[in-house]
Amino acid sequence: MWGRPNSGKTTFISQLRGEHVQLAEKKATTSRVTYKDVKLRLAAEFVVESIVDMPGTDDRLDDWRELVAKGDHVFYLLNISRTDDAGYVAAVRTDLKATIEALNKSSKGRKRINIIASHVDQSKWNTVDVAQVNNVLQEDPVIRRMYESMEGVKGYVYSANLTDPASFKRLLQSIVDDLQA
Ligand SMILES: Nc1nc2c(ncn2[C@@H]2O[C@H](COP(=O)(O)OP(=O)(O)O)[C@@H](O)[C@H]2O)c(=O)[nH]1
Ligand SMILES: [Mg+2]
Image 1 (cartoon, helix red, strand yellow):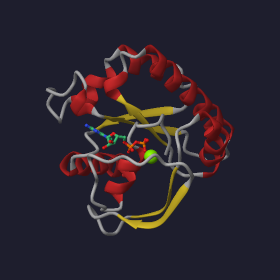
Image 2 (cartoon, helix red, strand yellow; image 1 turned 90 degrees about the vertical axis):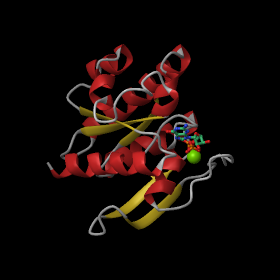
Image 3 (cartoon, helix red, strand yellow; image 1 turned 120 degrees about the vertical axis):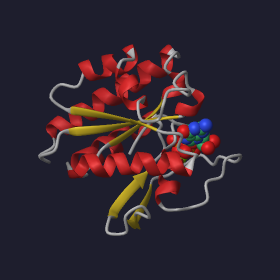
Image 4 (cartoon, helix red, strand yellow; image 1 turned 90 degrees about the horizontal axis):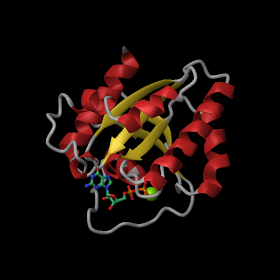
């Protein structure tokens, strides 16, 4: 998984690992950390063999390309409360372009990118019904432009408030359901 700094990567992994998520304090990840054999609380038969948390800084882009080529699943974290920030959106497009190039070069069969829209609670979609929000997001011009640049890679968009365990649980269930479909 990747995304710009503060997009929620570490929070996602903490929730996945069942750690207490600290709201107030934020530690920047300065090196790459790999977690192995993470059992999903939501369904104990699922185990994430390996998930990598890394700093979302530009100097890590090559590391990221390498992970995309090797890994089975690609998750890109997008802070959806920042889609009005042109600089942020441009940086996200650069990331996605690099990710899609790496996916298309990879010999792994599944050409698919999972985009997780975090911070939905702080976004203009925070009053949209949870059952509808993923569909509503697809209509957003920023998201639409992302889809248009995907070159054969399938994009799946999910959204959540990653700091809320119930919202995270729904997110994880949707991902698991789609992966099994
Ligand atoms: N309100 C809200 N805060 C979030 C969400 N996801 C992450 N955060 C907060 O955003 C900050 C950055 O998250 P973090 O996981 O450290 O981002 P990273 O730099 O990508 O690892 C932290 O203070 C988190 O608590 C979200 O969905 N909603
Ligand atoms: Mg982090």
